[in-house]
Amino acid sequence: MAVGLAAGYYGRRLIAESRIGAAEEEASRLVEEAAKEAEARKKEILLEGKEEIHRNRQDAEKDIRDRRRELDRIERRIIQKEEMLDKKSENMERKEQAFHDKEKDLEKTQQDLQLILTQQLKELERLSGLTSEEAKDLLLYNVEQQIRKETAVMIKSIETEAKEEANKRAKNIVSLAIQKCAADVVSETTVSVVPLPNDEMKGRIIGREGRNIRTFETLTGVDLIIDDTPEAVILSSFDPIRREVARVALGNLVSDGRIHPARIEEMVDKAQKEIEQEIREVGEQAAFEVGVHGLHPELIKLLGRLKYRTSYGQNVLRHSVEVAHLAGVMASELDVDVALAKRGGLLHDIGKAVDHEVSGPHIEIGVDLAKRYRESKEVINAIAAHHGDIAPEHIESVLVQAADAISASRPGARRETLEAYIKRLEKLEGIADSFAGVEKSFAIQAGREVRIIVKPEEIDDLHSINLARDIARKVEDDLDYPGQIKVVVIREMRSVEFAK
Image (cartoon, rainbow, N blue to C red):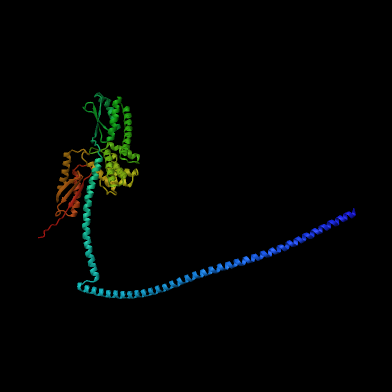
């Protein structure tokens, strides 16, 4: 077994060695073939590289040749442009030299002209006997006088046209305002008549020993007149509100039938509350009708009180509403503050609501009331200036003043017969004619203004001022009239000669 194992071992070894030798030979062969192929590939790659280098060199040389030709062409163009610039520079130098030469010639010519002008100016001054400054001043003076004359003519023409146009437009505006506003008129009276169901009621009103009538007159401040007038009694008082309270209270007493001092006191108190309510409602209605908002409640009440106030037969509340409408229409036509014009027109106579209770002119009272209830300065000025006592500070005040004059002087506005109206105007002119030195006098603007033409040889300017004051005082003393009257004294001196 040992021999067999040894023989098998050596046999397998011999076989393995033979296989290893064959493998080594095969490996050597493969290495040699690979080396040969690598050498052949190396030669191919070197050959291809040389060919690529050759081609790139040819391309580079061709590109260099092309660039060199382009550079040569550009160089030639640059050289041509440099030559052209040199030529232009030479031309510019020649032209500049020629310009300098002409400039020198021009300066010389100007000097020659200045010398000639100086010589001519001296010759002109010698011939005219005036220096250049004197001649210039004389020329300017003549031109100025000519311009002044033409300007004066032009200004006069423009003023005339403006006055004509202004008068025409003012008439149109006033007529339009009057057409748009028409107010009813209440006749002024100081008595009220209360109808009675029968004459027996008069005795009940008087009461036992006259206690009812005394109580009624004491509580109302009104005189109760019981006469032979059938089925009627008369209430008399200067205060229209008191008279209205008494009328309402007496009417309620007559309707109720129970007339005694306690009942009279109750009815008078009730009537006062009714009248106060009516006054407030009337004031609110007037403000609403005109379109004036934001009035103080006390001013509303005062407006309502104007319903019971009349001036020469004209109801003051309706007059105030009419003035507000007129002023508003004119303000709208003139494109100014319509609301301010209406407010000033509505409140312009507010002082008349309490002028029976407060002393002083109604204008001052109205101004104080407007200041107390914080009205604007413009409204206060409209109130203060509506009779011309002070100068209006803005156009709305002027419109209120004009509207007040229109409302008061329009036909039928105030209770005055034609005969009385004519007599008043004649008396006004007669007062003016009674003064020495007066040539003519004319009452105009419905008696609101009198114009007096005086003799200039008898009345000088200073005497004209005194004459206007004296005539105004005599008018105040001798004439009864509504509002105020403007006295204008005109003194004109004319000198006339004839050229023959």
